[in-house]
Amino acid sequence: MSCLAVDVGNTSAALGAVSKNGVRCVEHVEGGIGNITDVEKALERIRKRSTIKGVILGSVVPNDNIRWIKLLRRVTGQDTFLVSHTAKLSVSIDYPKPTSIGADRLANACGAVARHGSPVIVADFGTALTFDVIAGGGVYVGGVIAPGLPLMTDYLADRTALLPLISLKGRCHSVGRSTEGAMRIGARIGYRGMVREIIAHLIDGLGSKSVALCATGGFAKWVLNGAQMPFSVEPNLTLEGLGRIFDLNCNP
Image (cartoon, rainbow, N blue to C red; front, side, top):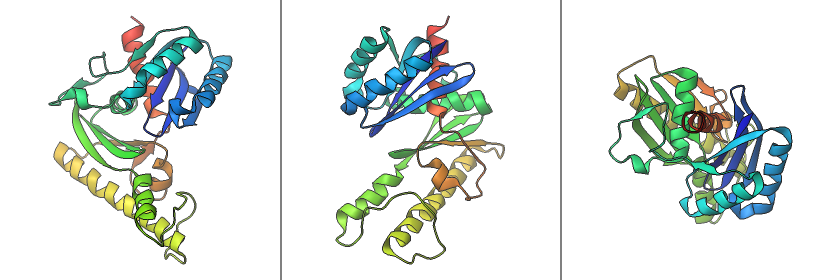
């Protein structure tokens, strides 16, 4: 038996079946609920391969929540647990305005502590690049928000006459031998530098050298591969964290 976990981001949604054995049947839908046909197909594929016992939704797009809840009810026949800071979590929160913490960041924190204990820092390479800091004792204390990699490259293409929109994939050479190659180096290597500086700043603030680092999000592997930073890259961390929250709140 699994719960259906749905992680709604600004540009896409991830869906998967989560059980004590891990995350299975992961589906990614660009456009999220705006691409409702693909969402319905993804849900049907998951249901064919898993027995769903409940549904949990973590969303950073509040205006879409009602549409998601209605769709999930229609397709699964079950009510949806909506994640917020008021839910039972596997971390405690020491933060001035907990209402402003995104559901994805709460899920990442819960997933990271389950895997690594604390202190731990989570970097999520999505539309925005977020860092979440969980201090010793499993206390969520805050983090950092920076522009996501696509925002940086899209902005260059939008605001310049000669720079193209590039694909954030492929190899980076030592020197750019084309406009695209030069931009790709700037994106990947420059981004690594930002990540390295932010991590050093956060670790210094924690006052501990034994801090676990984990990364998730669509661009984590591409940015960090070969960067020689001790990150554990965990693509399904958010869904896994949602599963943890479901167990705490819906499996008494």
